[in-house]
Image (cartoon, rainbow, N blue to C red; front, side, top):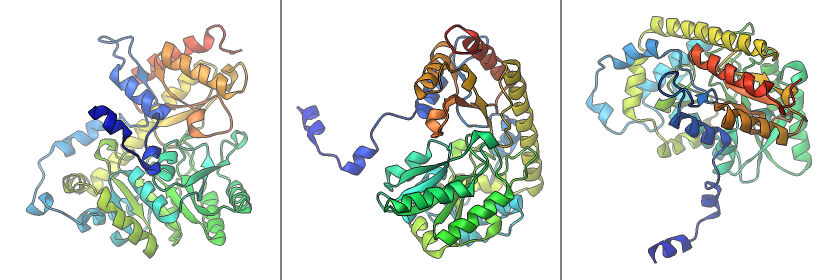
Length: 419
């Protein structure tokens, strides 16, 4: 009787938006980590190359994270909900130094993860039904970040594989104008830089042009720079922070560049007074614990250590990326052109019997269910070309080798469309 009563209780429409099937990225992650490959203890387990985490640098982090640190009474009490002054000053120093821009701590907001930041910015810039223009393909979590609570709708501005998915301000402008012509308001443009999933670094000229056109069109520009310090290729990373524009809001965090995804710390930089106030108010719902703030303050106390850590991390990321690229080459797959982050955007289009999303899903299922490799397909990144897969390389070389061995069997088996 109690169960019948509970199931009959009404839910709000907003509540129902939170309920549904988990995304492939989330579902595949938890399936894979529940049964992980181990060459001795579990040789038939999953090889997880689908989760964007850096497993290459814990040996550098561990001594500083394990070291004794001072704890004061203030660390055990309520702090400023959008980040203590000391914490924001520390982040301003480190983030500003990385992009050679002087940052004011008063322009920063800390919340429990970049998704919380993006959700809060979406809530502050968009009304229900507003459009957010996003160059595609793009990280699938953006749909949750912008849509579930804020009720915005993402409109892709498709980039082209013909030029390596180069950022196209013209495509963004066209998407804005087409959306407005339909009578819909455009709340913001959202960009991932360096790009997820292609691992490309956008050119400084393209970033500057996007800043210019969004200013002229009167649209907020939200730039997710979570891989800002993890660029290892030939293209220099160009931060939107360098433009100091009031309509530009830059998001960063400790999950990727400092391999601290479990700490759940996201940062927003904005000089827009109204937006700052609106997002800071929402930090009440998702603050960063004072204990985590204190841990990060101590971790980042030594500028020389930070410089050495980031340099070594980039070297290791470049090496792991090259290791994956060589393996993909041995399978007859083209170079991915990855320049940043922890993954590569691999072109498996030649192994589809036809260029359809159904064919991609069939290949994904065979890779996941038969070969027990977790890599993420193009369908979850909202591109317009099936057959691309995001493969994380920031892990032990043995895991990459095992995944490539299994992948080769799938691609070379009958009925996969390879040629």
